[in-house]
Image (cartoon, rainbow, N blue to C red; front, side):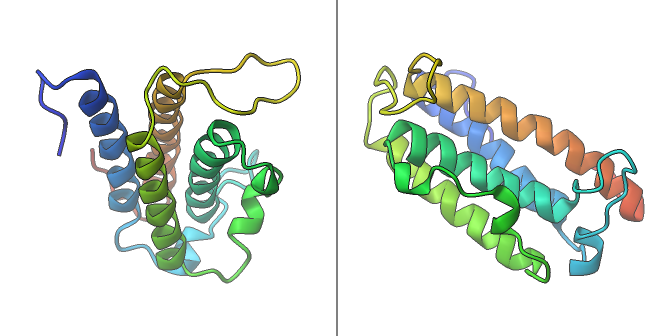
Amino acid sequence: MRPAGTADERAMLGGWLDWQRATVRMKCAGLTDDQARQALLPSSPRMTVATLVAHLRWAELAWFEVSFLGRQDLAYQDPLELAPPGTPLDRLLDEYDAQCARSREIVAAHQLDELEAWAPEGLELVSLRWIVLHLVEETARHLGHLDALRELTDGTTSY
């Protein structure tokens, strides 16, 4: 599943991002919906497994569709609205996977040097390469949060 050590740039970037994306589902395996909604960090009561999955879906949507493609009609969705109370974790994961599939389609159809169509006022336009690398970082950072929440939930630890 990891990209080959001799892969070209596109395969390397996409492979590492897909590795991180697949690990999200692995970190959630076996959790109940109630466990996925537990707020375990007193200083961050909105941080739950469910809201992290919803946030990661939103990050894929925001970067690849809103910023890169310029889909302003999607620009102001609140990530927490993507995970309303009672939404089953399996549904959130399926929606995340579907958004990741859409992101893969976008990346496959464009050159890595292409600039995004839109950026918030005052920010420079960035390349698709920059966005893919940022999503690797964003997803990996939140996998660390998922690691901690999972261990606090039921003691499960894993890669």
